Image 1 (cartoon, rainbow, N blue to C red):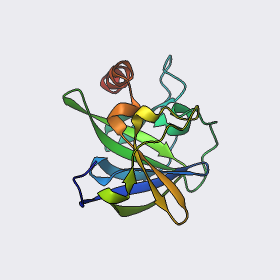
Image 2: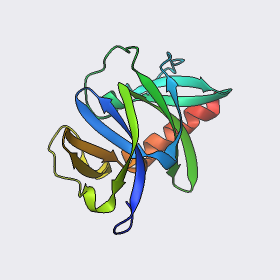
Image 3: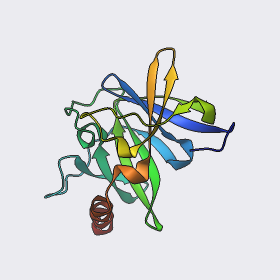
Image 4: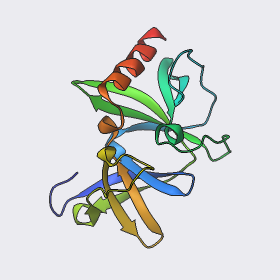
Length: 161
């Protein structure tokens, strides 16, 4: 999060009817959806590798990672290519979102602590929530989204490409 009274930019996107956001500093680019090259024996949420400017980028279905039902891509489906700092290194990974909305600023005083939200999501990788007139935005702490074993598996997947 940011210091008191400061502002940070976030990219907002949706999964089903929920709105999420990640810090814009972690977003390398946003691509139109394309089918990933499937990697055998990966977790269900690992769609495979996506070619991003000649680099094989592990691409995950965030819906499945968060326990939501998978869905078919639409013309609005996007891949957010992210640079996630994990354990002293940066992991480039693609995150499939149903729709990307905007880059928007959130002031630190707008960000509430992660609530205990029950079974739908583990709250440990929720950096906070922001309430807006149209509803809540869940801020995702990307490094906490993946355990060390998951990040190692994703790194090995990228290295094998």
